[in-house]
Length: 456
Image (cartoon, rainbow, N blue to C red; front, side, top):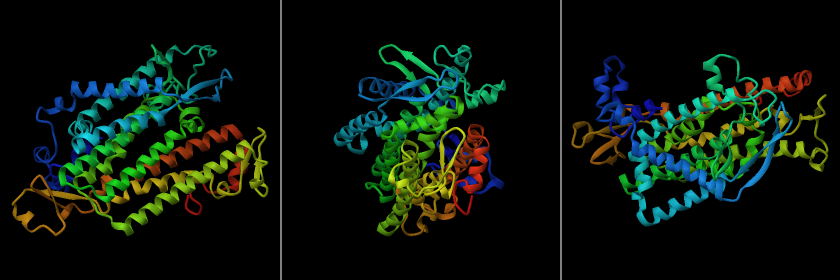
């Protein structure tokens, strides 16, 4: 994550020019082209930034306590057969925080202190979050050894999280649903709280901060960064609005809370997923109506597939006898449940994953053929730069030799997300095989494709 920040920067380019000449690459040369702190590694952290980051977490916790929420029970625990109770109000929490920022922006514009604080202290926010992820993962790992046999406190270990291998168990998570009771706040499910709140809301706040930075730098806001922030905000808010749906995800049902989920929730999601807006804040891209329509069409198609498939699955589970399933085909399992083999779920066993990936691709496409170099003002190269360059504090931002190389940074999200979904499908296949036994093997013979019909 630090390399992503240093190598794609607003000092020399994306990527830093020295990286394009690996044969002559030296640390001394690279260091002059990246935003390396003047006081060295000590500049990676700041007590002031740490305090404000903790204040952000505390605010989210207070809003969790005082705002009305939807209370539901999750799946029954494996050992006790009893469900845990959850309170959901992440959507309302985010709306309150965004409303407060909207008021601040109305009075201060792009100079609103929240926006300038985020962009001026990005490195410190990133590294404090990384340390916090290690701290939380360590705490839940140590605490997991206090889980008592017989589950008297509705605490249990994740089935695959206590192998005895320290590195693996620390990473994947030993305890299934660690909870903590805080004064005045009450009981909090740590995994669910981290999954749906601070990181996701932080993703939107980072995007908005980069919009403000682009405006402060150039005096305008490009259509690409507005579109990108809009679709990513929709993605976050739609997920938080349907927050209770997390109870059906394997993250909650089968996975323990370990470093993988903690780091993913509070570091990977907000800081990696906002990387495209960070890029556009330095190198604006103007898409125009036609390109905007094309990218929007991809997003809408992905949203439709994702929502339609999940809606069909939920409707069939809750009431398979309704008229819409009159001609549907399914496999009756020995467990008494039915596995749908027609409609969306006759195409692939996880067609919803394809929709989820497709709706994420417009998170990268607005950056175009990415890459830029920042040339010193008045240099010979700047004078000979191509038309359409933008000015950054008197310096000229052009694509030049970096054209295309920046896609390593801006398109990585889409590649990673595809890998994540393929990996998750594999884990889910193992879980379903254990759950349904021979019936699952029969189901796979009927629905042969895993995610994308004809491809995978």
